[in-house]
Length: 91
Image (tube, rainbow, N blue to C red; front, side):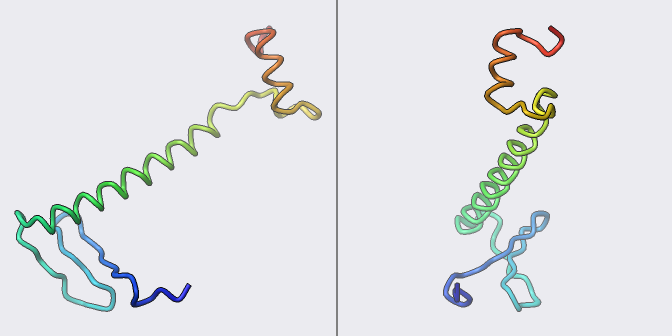
């Protein structure tokens, strides 16, 4: 996409809140009470929240699948109809 150098990239280490730029060996330290640091922390926290939520949603969708779906010739709609009619797999 040819975006290198056009979009600023920054990494933040969680423990000491060090800021890292690509290809720069030394971290940048901002004042712990700095508004800039607070905005960067909020961005990091939101990215983590989004990633964790997405992962949990994908994982939970795969967890609760009916064993009926594994029977050859039975699709999702048939599974829904059977469960609606009989209320459980046991019946």
